[in-house]
Length: 120
Image 1 (cartoon, one colour):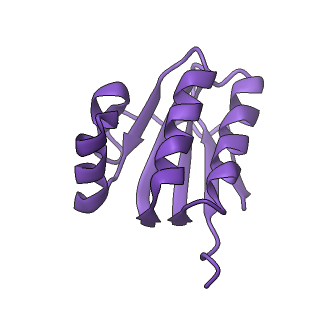
Image 2 (image 1 turned 30 degrees about the vertical axis):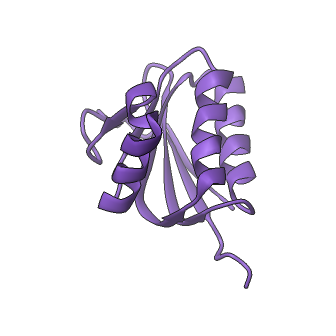
């Protein structure tokens, strides 16, 4: 059964920060889309990334791996927000909650929408 489409809404914030709001399933088929979107933002000078997972219905090991790839590939922070309880538990059990900044959705975003782009 094919995975559902992953939608990535990108919002460029101030001071080199951007938010990626995900909707759908983050899995083997869609994790490369997230990595590519983050790499494009970092090439454009956005080093601090927030990944809003409020709309994610499934995240498998490939999704977790994507977070690590994004974390290791940049000089700025990656912050995860909006996790459901199952994903939060998975991050805690794998130790990724300690590696990555984890917070609640919308916390400290200070938006100044320089632009929004949908990918996926």
